[in-house]
Image 1: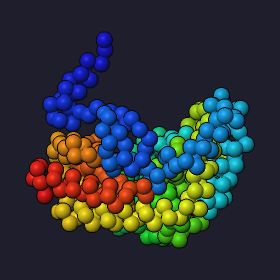
Image 2: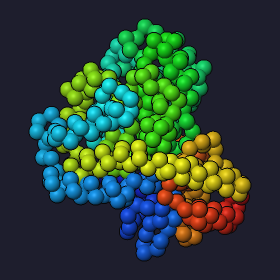
Image 3: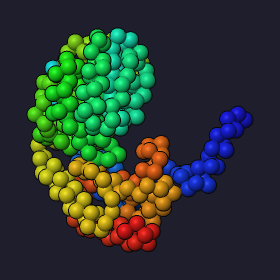
Length: 390
């Protein structure tokens, strides 16, 4: 009944070897997970610091659920704001060195809500060509004019700023860490150009929150740019380990978004367990500094190992390390064979990345042991030779 053309598209995907089933984990999110009864080394999770199943977060979540219930029963603007929601936003603003912070239901919802609310027909948004899908969709919801600049191309960015000087507000938007390639945006140069042309900057730190900067404060802090970036967006569901998204900003921007940010206005607030686990995550990040040392030691070891084997890992300088294959079907073959060798590393192809740029994206975490990473490298070696990738 209906949508018959979808069957044809799905069949074409199956014939091309790009159709994928969802993979169900049968264990908690750790350095090793269980899939179909088999233990695998996990290299596909965004759980950078191992906080998703950290005992301190789990206990705080359980205690909050028992004390305050499973849900809130309302949106924030009617009856769904608990004191803990406001306390967490104050703590998050302090952590990010900003005047205020507002929490949304997810990182995706944050980009949709912020961009659609703050930009109008008199404004221009200037966006990096490889920004995250949530930024692209947020821009689609605005009535602002838009200019896409070539990926991390500062000359093209300056040209865009020069071309748009008659706009009321120009907002330069960039990922802090680009999620598919693992490279860091040249944020100091972006901020300097924006200041030169009286524009504002928005940074999406989804993959930098909990990874870069002091105690994981993100790329703005990493580059010493606190106070010079208008909007810092991020997620609470990757390195921070729980769920949600946020924008760290000035107080008047937060007040405006409370009234005009549609995902905030029309979504029920986070349940107590989520809020309190997020609060505990900030404390863990401040106190357990050894997590960051292990994350970066593991990152360097694994990158070096893949390079030595002869894989193309692009220009990544973060724990995101893509093993670039190119062909979509071959990429998924690599992923499937790795699983047979005890490694869970998912293939990523079009439309998540451009056609011909398929890759197995790996992410190491603070939880991985040296034994985990050595076993994973041996699996990559064996499968890479079998598929003639190295």
